[in-house]
Structures are given as structure tokens and as C-alpha cells.
Length: 567
Image 1: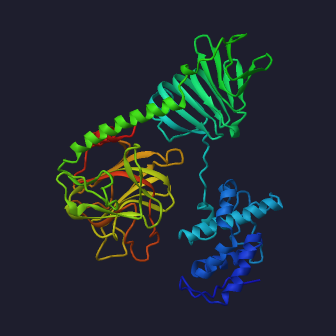
Image 2: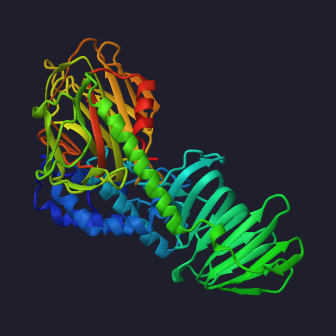
Image 3: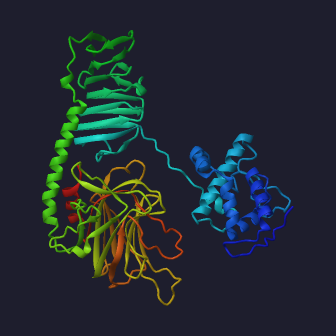
């Protein structure tokens, strides 16, 4: 039995090689659930003081696999003080630490919990957030993996007006189970099963699961590829089982009559309390109450097809782009602009993004490093894609300012980093703003104002929004904006033209200047030395970025959003 003495070097990095065999034993006992309180204290001390011990722990666990496969287990862990079990504080050294769930779980369950708990600890260590607050710290910081309960994705939304609770549905949104009420326009729904459904307003569709939906009213057209065979669509008094085909359904909400038109393949119709009817290509069915009759012919042109929807989408995108291009000419002459990047390729030299201000200051052109050109908000519009740690746009902005507005269009593909850069200055000197997205989906705007007399005291003004990015809305274009005025000290953040946070930092002091200098879009070019989170590259695309030298009002930002939104 070991004692509570640690014998560590206390240097935070290296450690006595003689400790390593003991550390290996302690890790093994902890993973097996048989570690004593004293040995657990010793292990935590080693983990705190010795990087080699931390490396050993990481190697002992298959971190990513365990967390992904056992997210539900880790979410329920109470690592060292499980409910219903006595606190081990004050217990004798010889007492064996109860492992989470040890008294009630099966052997297999205990094994998984052990590994999942170890993985959670490794996450805390690797992120540098392990809190030296005793054994109870683990139970407060366990990693919880967000789950996605969606059933489908909206892949085309054209001229749509929604009547259900979420009236802001847009292309790229994930759709959960529930009702879709489309007053007008068109919406293409791609189910996770592989089935695709086109709604044509006025229509009401209830999504049950990735494999099942109910058409309560209106017209829908369904295409089911072989992997999605068996997809169920319900109409009043009837269930339709698709066997790999394309068909249309029209429901009259007044008398709840239904028509089924099979354009390709085969559909099984199951009218309530009646025998199955097989409908093949070119066949149709009419149902009203208990009456069921064949249709004299199908009418494919009565239902919106994928090709027609694509054509409508392309026409509307071109119209939106043309309107934006006209608006851009006006906005580029705004004398309040410091820099304006419309993100359009510059002829032969595609590694530069031009400052679109009129008149143009070429010294504020941006240099593209690593990032690749891709499609922007419309098919005829460019954007830059940031994926790798080296991807960035370099720029330099001289001068001192009393206020700012930062705006950009961004499509976030993932929040991989603790902080995901939008605009960061090199380093983080006095008066320099940083604008980024945190890993939990919040916007973060901050300005550095270090205390020169007390450099260890943090005086930076930091402002967070509520969570604005989640699994349901990443992967689509959003306009982000923040305003700051050094007279009022008020920082206001916006998403898609709507204010999401407003705050004055308690550390605010009036009149302090704002400066930029060398800075980057989508990355952090010169991190602070020994900073805990130096890698901050954006995973996503950026399309249009502007910096104003005043704090724009909310209604003006709303107009900018309306003029530049993709749909």
C-alpha cells in the first residue's frame, strides 16, 4: 500500500523517472476501480506535476472512440462521489475507493464506465482545464457530447412562408420530428433515410422519423432510392409503403380526400380496414372516407419536380445575387468603412482579396494563405474556405479608432477549437479587438487592455453572447456582427440582423483607443507566447467581411442583412 507522500519534482513538466512505475500502477488501479483514497490523491498529484504521467494516462485510453461510442454513459457519470454512496472523505487509508456504479452495475458496465471516466479525465487534462480541486472536481466537468435528434435536412427552400413555430426555416436547417406548415413556396426535405420529399405550399407535413411522415394537407412528391425502400407516408385513412419509386400525394383538407399518383416503380397502399393495393407506374388511387377507387390517369405535371425546383432555385439565386451586386456598389462608397472585402477573385492573382472600399486603399488588401476559393452564398459568388491550421487571410489596418462595427457572412462547418477565429490581431496588445466563436457556440468579442503595472492581472474586456451555433444551424450561411463604442463601453452582438447580446464590461474605462495593426481573418497569426489555446483556425467558409469605424445602429445592421442575405 502506498502512502500519501508524493515525492514529485513539482516542475509542472518533467518528473522523477522513478515515479513512472508507481504512476503506471496507480493508473491501472484507478481504471480497474480498486484505487484507495490515498492512492487517488497521489495519482492526482502526479498528474498535476508530471507531463509524462499525463501522457501515460492518455495512452491508456482510447479517448476518441470511447467518448463517441459511450457518450450516453459519460453523460451520466459521477466520477468520485456517486449519488447514494458515502463520501469517502475521512475514510481510512485502507478503504477501497468505490468506482462509479460499482455497487449496482454489471461487470461489463463497470468496465465501460471506467474507461469512459478515464477518457473524460484525459479530455480535461489535454484541454488544460483539469482543476486541482480534489476528487470532486471530476464530477463537475465531465464531458457531455451533444446529440443530434434530427430526422432530415432542408436542402432547398424557395419563396417559402412558414406557419409553424419556427418561421425562419432556411436551406441547410436540420429538421426534427414535428409539424412543417408551409403557407406558400416550396421546400425540399431530405430524410436521413435517403428519401427526398418536395412540399408545395399550402401544405402541412408531420415528420415522425427519418423513415416516416404524414401528409395532412397539400401536395408532396416523394422520391425513394433503393436504400430508403420501406419509407412510410401516411395520408388520411391510408398508409403508403414505398418500394423504391417516385410518387405524388395530394390531400384535400376540406373533405380529407387523397389522391396517390405513382410516376415510377411501385407503392403499396394500405387503406384503413381494407386490403393492400399494389400501385405500379402509371397507376393512381383516390380515397375519400371508405371509398377507394382507381384514378383514370396520373398527372405528374401537377406536382413540382426536382428539375423544376432546381431551375426556380437557380433563377432566384441569380436575382438575389444581382440585387446584392447593385447594393454592393452603394455600400462600398460608405465613408465609414475601414475595410470591405466582398470576397471576389481578383483575375490572375487569386491569392489576394481586394479591399472593395471606394476609393480603395490598396494597402488594406488581404493576402490569402492556404484558404481555398469556393462557392459563396450564391452559385455565382465566391467565398473562402478555411479548413487547415494554416489557412488564413493576412491584412494590416493602421490608425486609432473610437468605435467599430465588424460584420461578416460565415458558414461554420464545425467548432473544432476552444476558440474559432473570425478576426484576431497578431498577439493581443492594448486596444486590439478579438472576435471569435467559442467551442460551445457562443460569439466572443474582447478588447485587450493589460495592466502595465500589474501584468498578471487580467483587465481585458470580454463579452459573450448566448449560444448561437448548434448542430441544427451549422453548415448554413449566417451574418454575424458586433458593435463597440469606447465612449459608452457597450458591446452589442448580432446574428442574422437580430441583436443577441448587449453588455458593458465592468472593466470598461471610457476613451481608450481601438487599434488593429497586423491581423488575420479565420486564424491567429501570432499567438501569445505559451498561450494555452494558440490554434484557432476557423472550420468553415467566409463570404464578405467589413469593418466600420463607428458602431452601426441595430436597424442599419438589419438593412445590411436584408440586402445581403442569400434567400
